[in-house]
Each structure stands twice: as structure tokens, then as C-alpha cells.
Length: 575
Image (cartoon, rainbow, N blue to C red; front, side):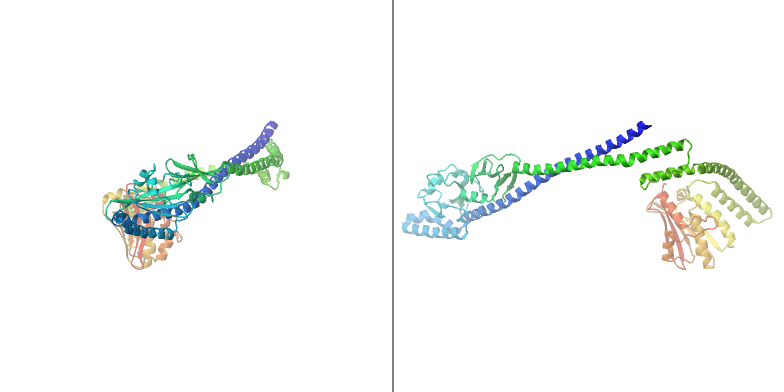
């Protein structure tokens, strides 16, 4: 026995420590997973927000350049210049220079007004052959070049860009109009079409210097091991390093944002060191939580041993004494805690064992008495049936047909009450029960009440209804509808089918009911007793039907005071 006690105590300690260990591991694991996810999501969201801001600023600057290029391609003054400049120089050199100067002033004014000088070093508008052109320079490091159009037309990218249907980005190229190739530029070349036809009148060249891009990227703060990339199109990607852009391949796992206007992609590869540094702090916090939970479990196991093991041993000892026949009360077991409640229960158990034994003997004697009473109750109905049959026989001999009918009806009712056990019976059988009851009531009221049946389809009489459902309703119509009226009355039971259900309307021409009375009867607040079936009222019948067939069925009441009352049964077909 002692071995079992020690085993239970050890199990409690092991369970307590095991629970604490599992809880600590679970909390630590969950905390670690959630913290890693939170840190990564926070890092990515922060980076995405930053590259959104950076990308939108850069996109806005380049969008201004594209707006200026679109203006050049659509401007009527520049279109007229490209259409007429060759002819003007052929006819009169002075007229050609005048036309060129007017177009250049128009271009230069727009160049200044539209605000793209900070993003563009040079703009050249040329005829297809490159012989006549207009050139505007922002004033930075760019210098005028007399052979500019021809030089640009000789570049490897000219044909690719001028023939595309939309803007194409090939990244940075060496400046074709400087000997050193610096600064690197992003070339923008578009054809200029005639507004009245698809004839190419010339082309426009715009260079965007590298400093425009790097000055925007410089606002993005980078740590030691993260990286920022800019992709113009497939195969043209650059990494921002040390204030310049170096050709590079964008790695997997970057956070990317596509600029809505240009289609460029800014990609950011987050810093692993920054994430690791923050994770180390979270790991330390998780370790502290793990240690606290484990230490708490150890203390808990010690407290469990001290507060449970000793009282449990005393309770077990007391149960052993009870098993040996000692039913005396031990007050020292009734501590002021849950185990004390068990001690009180044990004391109550031991104090009441003898009373329980005496009660058991008394119950056994009572059981024998009840069995004898049941035998008597089985004999009494037979005696009552025989007596009623004797009354019927004597009434028939003496010509008292009313007494004979009442005795027959009462005998059948008593037989149905005492012997039938079926809850559901055919509607026709229920009508027979109502007939027996009404026969008695008819003689009681001297023939001043009438009962009439109206059945639309005889097959409906085979459908099922709860036994003794209609009799209480008919009785209610007689006692509470017709009798208070003080005159002859009539009850109509109409059976028909509606919406796939069997409907039975029990209508009387009595005093009727108010809405408040209807609500009271259906809610069970007003329970009316009957002479034969005191526990079966309208509310009880309604609840029986709902319990048997479901909430969609039961009794509803329609009434007009001083005119009529209709109790409507709704029953399912085929049940």
C-alpha cells in the first residue's frame, strides 16, 4: 500500500515538472516562431515603405522627362520646323536660320518652363538624316557638339530605341557626345511623326545623367550587408554601391517595387546582420521566460508534495478504517480546503452507513408493498368494466337507452385510458374517442350541443395524431366556449389538406376569446383542468405535437369574441 502512495506522489511531481517543461518549451517555441515572423514582416514592411517612397520620387522625376519628350513629339511648331527646314535652307539660307532660331527659342522656352533641366543634360531634335537639328543643353557638364545627331545615329542603341513602339530602357551607356564617355546617361530616343500621316519627320534624343538616379538613391540609408538594386528592363539591372550604380544580377528573396510610370523595378535585399542582432535580443528574452516557467514548475511540484501528499495519506488511512468497520467521525480530516470537503464527505459517509442500511431495508419492504398495489390496480379496471357492462345490460332491459349509451361510452373511454400505450393513433380512432366523450356530454347538457364532422378526403383519417389530443380541445370548447354562452351550441371538426399538411379545425360558436386569452392559453400561463383528463390542457396538447413532429407543427387559435373560436391542428402527412 505504501508503495502505491509513493508512486502517486512521484507521478504528481513528474507530471508537474513535465507539464512545466512542456509549457516552457511550447511558449519558447511559439515565441521564437512568432518573433522571427514579426521581425521579418516588420523588416520587409519597413523596407517596402522606404522603397515605395524612393520609387515614387524617382518615378515622378522621370515622368517629367517623359512628359517633355511627349510634348516634343506632338508640338506643332517643332513639327513645322522638321517639315520645312530642309526646304527653307535650300531656298534661302537666311530663311532657314531664321526658322531654326525660332524653333530653338520655342524649344528652349519649354525646356525651361516644364522644369526638366535638373533631370536632363541635353535635348536634340533632328531630321531623319541628321543634317538639320535643334540642340538645347541644361548647362551642367554637357557641351555643344556640331556632329551630335550623326554621332547618336551611329550608336548601337539608336536603331533599337527609335523603332520601338513605346519607351524602352536599356540602362546606362557611355555618353556618346563626350570623349571620356562621362557622365553615363540613360538615353531616351523617340521618333517624331507627322500629325496628318504616319511619316517619320525626325527624332528626339534626351539623355538622363547618372547623377539624377544616384542622387535619388542616396537618400536610402543602407547598412553593411544589405543591398539596393535598380532594374530598367530584363538584363539591365544595377546595384547601388558607394554612390554609383554597378551592373549586377538581382538575387532571390528581394523586396521589389515596380514604378507605375516607367516600369522600373527597385529591389531591396534586407540586412541579415540587422535581423540577427534583433533576434539575439528576442532569444535572450525567450530563454529568460523558459527559465522562469521551469523554475515555477519546480516550486509548484514541491508545493504539491507538501500540500497534497500528506492529507491524501490521512484520507486513505481513514478509508482503510471504514473498510474495517470503524464508522466513527474524525473531525481532524475536515480542513478548510477542497481536501477538507472530501474529509467531510468521508465523515458523513461513515456516520450514515447504518442509516443507509436501515433505509435499504425499508425501501425493500416498500417495494413489496408497491408490487401488491400494482396487482390490485390490474384487478380494479376489470371490476369497473364488468360493473359498467352490468349497468348497460340492466338499462337495456329497462329501456333506458341513454344510460346504456353513456355506460358504453364511458366503458370504452376508461378502457382506452387504462390499457392503450400507443402515443400516435389514426385520426379516425381519435374521432371515435371524441364520439365516446361527446355522447356523455350530450346527455349531460340535454341535447343542447351538437358535434359535426366534415372530412374533405376519407384517406386523411388514416394519418397519425397524438392520442387524446382532440378530446381536451372539444371539452375546452364545451366548458369555456358554449356553456358560458348559456344557449345551444355547435362544434364542427373540419379535416382537410393544405400545403402538404393535415389540418384539423375544431370550431365552436361560443363566447370566443380575446388576443390576451389566446396568448395566455398557448404559453401555458392559463392551464385549464378537465373533468376526465385534468393534466391535459391546450398548452400540453400543443407541446406534445411539437415534441412529436417538430416546431413547424402544433395548434394555433383564431377567435372573434361572442362569435366563434377555432383551434387549428397542423400535422404532417405520412408520419
